[in-house]
Length: 169
Image (cartoon, rainbow, N blue to C red; front, side, top):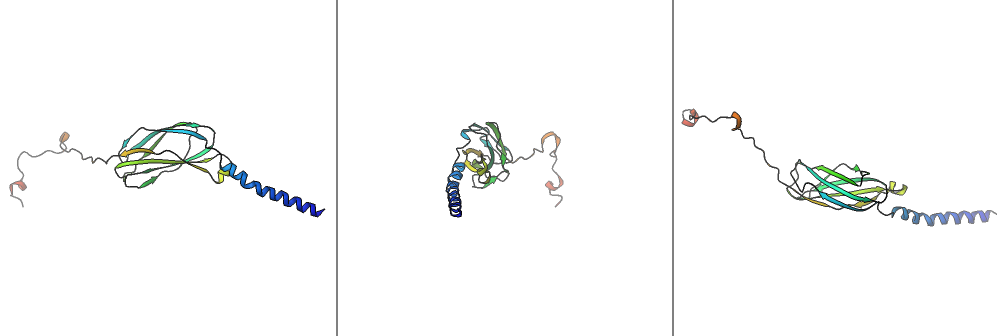
């Protein structure tokens, strides 16, 4: 009798061990909850300190919890990472990120990735999906020098001063 119980235990345990990788792979390989997405850059040219804005349209095939990791890479190759945010439930949403003041002028790239959690296994190991990159240009930061000659902020003397006449050295 104990011989049959041992064989039964070995069979059940072996069957469970054999099925575990298959079930895990099935849960990890679940199709993406978004079938397509479109990025529209609203501000193709942005100065440092200003907001880069774009609109995202997507087709959601399954409701899942997702976290978006976003970054901007400037023309010098410096990557600025932003705080991760939960993916909105709305399939159409806007993105707005402030370009860092030290960003190098020239072509820049917005890139993002989503970590999806559609089942219990993906809560431990989220499914990572890289999204399309959006290209834009970081313009040089314009130096703003106030015009001191306006509105009487500073007036030039009509007569030469004592320093200009060489009296005071």
